[in-house]
Image (cartoon, rainbow, N blue to C red; front, side, top):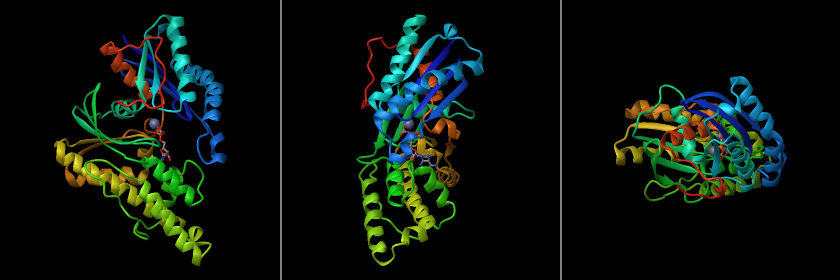
Length: 333
Ligand code: KG4
Ligand code: ZN
């Protein structure tokens, strides 16, 4: 019997989830709106908000399932990467529960969990599969051979795809995080209205910092002649930036499928909530003969269900952590 209780607190979402033998029973997420007015996540405010949210979130996750903490078989938590103050809240809580109930502790890597979010729902991919993981801090193509056997075969050399959305959105005057607003405006715009440079990066790696600079210089020139250029063209600007980001992502994904011969392709991470990306990946899949897997939105953005499912596979493999384990802001895997 594997009843796993999981906590996610790596950035600005506090989440708790319960998973029974690989099936998610509950997934509670508290978002932090306090950061909006600062144009980005303020680490100190994030850890304070986690402290306020964690008990109600854990309570809610338990109440909906009727499970008691004493029946839990293991406590999983996000150990890395993330904001250290945020990670510490979830880690300390999980450790305390593990100690109090004398049950094993499981340390989970956040990026590993984003990929395994694809195993939560049916139909799920079989191994091996490729996963494009696109979040606010990472952009990776992962080759998954088994639940606990992954290789990162491509990743960003500078900004992440989510950062590209957020930074371009900031230039357009959109609130943080700008990804969802760009997505909404793009639905009403022309993706071919403006052309932005695409990077030339070797292998399967990505680069997004040049896009942000190219948008900055483009706007600077246009605003010289027309101060209201952004307001007048917001939908087209969002559609064109989104189109460029999607193009960069899909180009490398096509190369990865060609190199590996693996045609099961999954999507993961906060940016996979983007409607344009979901549609473009599905269309590319239909055209190229790939099988596409895209998690529901609640499992794309940060959530504890993905920590619970990863915790479950680590539980089956007996991969437990010692109570001396520390969270880490930047741990590779
Ligand atoms: O995975 P995630 O929730 O947190 C991290 O681990 O970083 O990803 C957050 C990122 C942010 O950059 C946000 O702008 C982006 O996901 N995002 C989106 C959309 N929803 C969230 N980007 C584009 N379109 C969306 N609909
Ligand atoms: Zn994430």
